[in-house]
Amino acid sequence: MEIDTRHLRMVKAVADEGSITRAATALGTTQPALTRQLRRVEEHLGGPLFERSRAGAELTPLGRLVVGRAHAVLSVIDSLQGDSVGGAAHLVPAQVRIGVKFGNALVGLIRGLRSVVPSTEIVTESETRIDGLLDLLSSHRLDFAVVHEFVGHELALDPRLRVRPVGCEPAFVLLAADHPLADRPELELSQLRDEKWLMSPLDVDREADCMTRICFEAGFTPVISHYLSDGHAIELIRAGEAIALSTPTNRDSGMVLKPLVGTPMRTRRLLLVDRDNPFVEHLDKLARFTADTLAETLDKQPVYRAWKDVHGALPAGPRPRPGAPTASWPPPGHARLA
Image 1 (cartoon, rainbow, N blue to C red):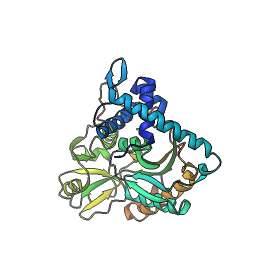
Image 2 (cartoon, rainbow, N blue to C red):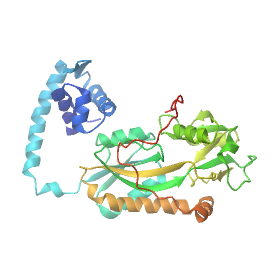
Image 3 (cartoon, rainbow, N blue to C red):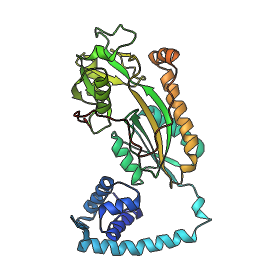
Image 4 (cartoon, rainbow, N blue to C red):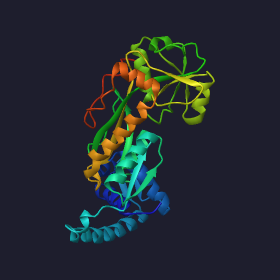
């Protein structure tokens, strides 16, 4: 990594506040995200910049040297920025960085960016964890991110973020093609009480948490035997060793998609950008491109089209404001999985 002005401002904020927690508040980020960023800077510079204790964070000799240089560099940069107000402040940045887990949302966002900022280079960041994407966004290493959340288990988002819902999908069940229930047009969740389930790894999202809730409401506790993603998951399902929840777009051979009666689980997709990001003025147009591409992808799946003909498309929003509390779950005495 290379040290840039964001890292210098971060180190200076910790020194000024005397506490990582207070610095995180001042910077509009979270304490874990700031701690991770600080560790990366310290690893790059070859030693700790602060001595941490219950009393706060105190500069080490290396830290004092870095903060002194940071003051000098930032004062020059801030002066240059002040002189450029009304001029270069309105230039479009040469590069836009995006992070998206699912390919169909990535395609939509890229199409939108090519429309609104055709001369800007588009750089993508790979990150499978939702928390990882949010950390990259809050530390300004990403300009935009598309994340997903489960309705009823909404993400607690930084209030600095601007949010646009761009899609909402029912969760279908993915079964082996020769599964005993593979010929049913739709399934009651209770019919799957004896199945072995495969879920996303616990650090990826809250799928297992949401799955446990909807099964609890259906009168049973799911047997979650595997926490996998990508190729390993597909092979287990295809072999009949497990079943899984799936987006309605899955079209892998050797497996079938089945809707759940009552649509007990829904996945909402969100486009996010920091309120101070120079690209924020394009948020609404980018959201429309992303939403249109997601809808087109869904409509290419025959099982989803048949489901939509009966139930209609799910509305994407509105969602709760960033940081709003979610529904009361888990019930007393029932621990969360994630």
